[in-house]
Length: 183
Image 1 (cartoon, one colour):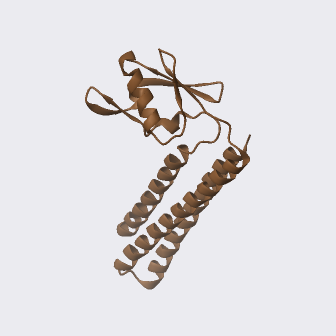
Image 2 (cartoon, helix red, strand yellow; image 1 turned 135 degrees about the horizontal axis):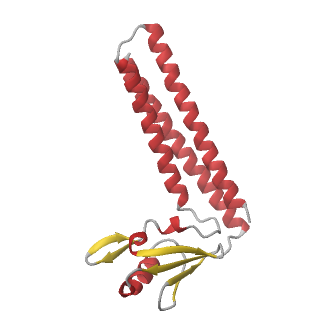
Image 3 (spheres, one colour; image 1 turned 90 degrees about the vertical axis):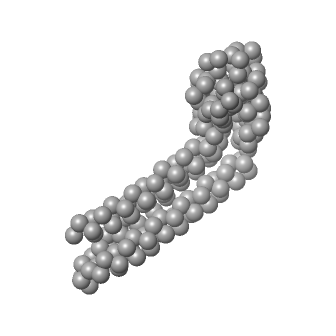
């Protein structure tokens, strides 16, 4: 019995990690509103070490369509600006001497639809990952060599977990699409 609980725990844990990864991935997609999460992948060379931008600067949202990045150490202002230029976020930074301003352009209707399709595709990829976790869980259950009725019950539990997490993915994706399509 303890083995069954362990298998179910492992399956649920791997599915939860898939949801967390999905949320991180979707946070990086621009929706037309300023979101500091789009800067999460940007690192700055700070005293010889790659340091995440959010650790060396205050990042604030201005007027809903702008991000203002104010480094704690003004000497890295140029480095921040260059790192943003070098990144793939597609926004030109404006250096005002004390900080860097990022003005997010409004998304066109076509771009919104394109982003929505991209979000749907990411959701489908994550559903496949959840199903792979289910398959691995099913293999673990079968390896336990349980009595037939207990094995069938445990496989049903794994399927219920799969259904629960596929539904969560659908909800997260629907929320992101709604956010993107809101003007």
